[in-house]
Length: 111
Image 1: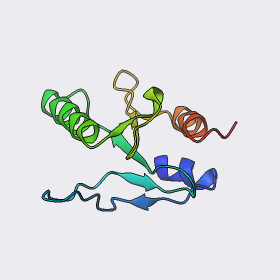
Image 2 (image 1 turned 90 degrees about the vertical axis):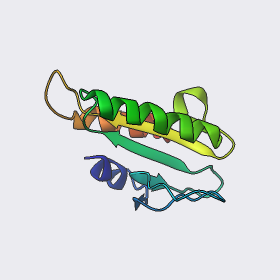
Image 3 (image 1 turned 120 degrees about the vertical axis):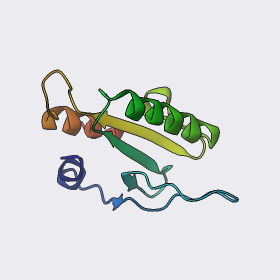
C-alpha cells in the first residue's frame, strides 16, 4: 500500500536499499525516496506495534535514526534526511490506504 501510494504520486523509491554509515552494518529502511534538491526520505511501515518487542525495536530504530541526524518529518527532518512512518491500525485490524496516501501527500507537499 505504501509502494502504491508513492508510485501513484509519481515518487520513485527504492525498497529496502542499504543505508550505511562508517563503522556500522547497513540498515535497510522499507522505502528510500530521493528527490533532486531535497534530503532523502526514509519511510518505515510498522506492521506489529501491538507486540511489545516490535514496539521496543521501533523505539530503538527511531533513536538510531536520530543519532544519525535523520529526524521525523513532523519535526522538519534533519540534516541527513527525513524519517516518515506509517502503521497498521491495530484496533481496525488493517492499514488505511487513504491515510497512507494523505501522509505521502503531506510529507512531499503534493496537495
